[in-house]
Length: 365
Image (cartoon, rainbow, N blue to C red; front, side, top):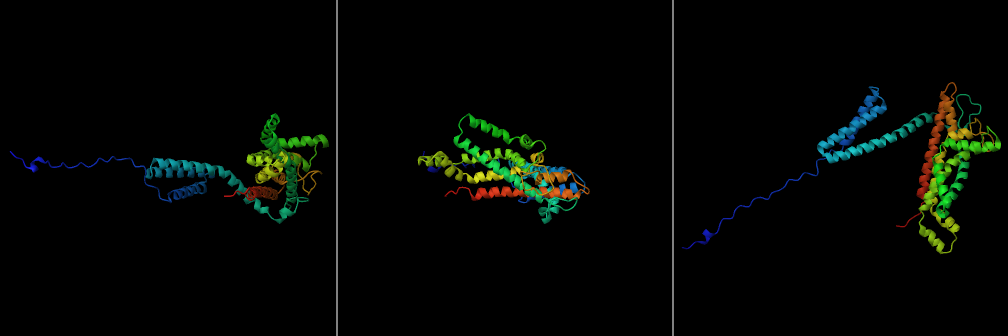
């Protein structure tokens, strides 16, 4: 019995489609580009409404706006973009809010000083003293010059001491004396400013008797505060100088002291100058030590070794603490002096940045 080839061949079975496993989506939709700014604007408007119309405390209104903005954006993001992106937006909102909270006191102080200080920020304020002034008029010429003289002398005292101390600690100090000096510098960094003033007063009282007030006393008090800052900043700058430069100089039989003077110090000069400038900005607004040592006067006195002098910080304190009748002229002078101090400190910080940028060692690409 014969069979045909067709009868022995079976028809192919239809292939089953491959099984495709569904994976959870790693990406979701995204919020519109203007969603976060619009939500922030809406809650800022709500905060202003709470403050202006309902007389809510501005701090409370601001916190309410921040919390509302965070909840709105995070909830919206979770619904559209998923939990992972919502958590990222939550952390970003918390960090941004913390930054704004930290910035708020600075902005409020600057705003208040600017708004009140510009009322007497004129030529008369800088050209006149308070000699014979009882009420309106007068100025802070004597206080401005006293601040420059006292701070300048403090710089002349503290920079050489701080610079030589830092050179010893980095280049020569290896024993117990260096550890003791480092310890005392750390202690001096944290002392209250009034302690520096009392130290200077007690020191000069030994030679001139009780009740003495002189500009040089204030310079000594400020130098006590400046020296640890100069030492620390100079020490860090000297440590950044590569040891290869020192070794190359010594390989040419150059003495240690000449290597320090000709190689190390010029390399670190920009950082040292920046540290000194920041140290000046640190002490130029001190009030407590100058109130104890220098005092206050209404006349110009350009001799720091003879009698009292006026400084901007003490002048501002005196005008604000003991106003006359009417008090407005005294308060205006106090705010103008504070505004002048802030401008000086800002200028010193800008000068420090400029020095650091212009005189930094040039590197070849």
